[in-house]
Amino acid sequence: MGNHAFVKKTKGMTPAGITQLLNDLNQSRFYGKLSITMEGENCWIIDLVEKGHEFVHLRCYIENKNFEMCHYHHGSLGWWVDNTIVNEVALKFDGTISDDAGPETWKGRRGFRKTFREHMEAEIKSYGKYGSKMMFRLGMRSVPKEFRG
Picture 1 (cartoon, rainbow, N blue to C red):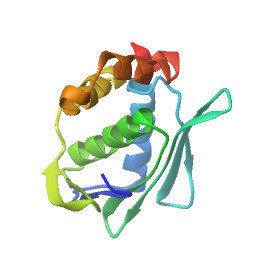
Picture 2 (tube, one colour; picture 1 turned 90 degrees about the vertical axis):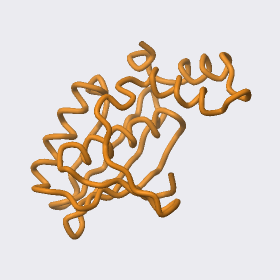
Picture 3 (spheres, helix red, strand yellow; picture 1 turned 30 degrees about the horizontal axis):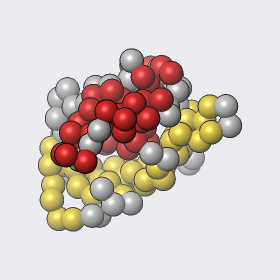
Picture 4 (cartoon, rainbow, N blue to C red; picture 1 turned 45 degrees about the vertical axis):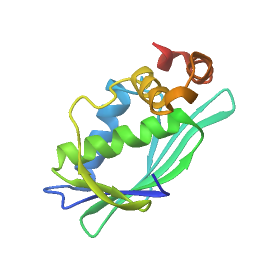
């Protein structure tokens, strides 16, 4: 992914709907660890800071009936949170996902990397022969304990 991900051609997306989705995801998938702050009427700042370490910092907003996610990542956990939110926005509002890294578009997928562990397993597998158990263990150890399950 590039620096921005988009969910376009959405149906019925509102700021209230995004706020509800973010809060639901925070409780159901992110262990209530995210700090979600609304900035204005259609922008959200999403952070996960623990023991002085910033694990996640994202900014997302609605513009012209499209959802946009700005990436400010701090490793694999940030990518997983980002990908999860974008995927779930696409599913809930029947949108099409794209990003500024290329022309491809895709739909959200049900059951996509439900846990950080699934995300890490898929990432390590994508490295082929260069992926290793050590990379997996280091990735899992470098996040808050709730995400290691």
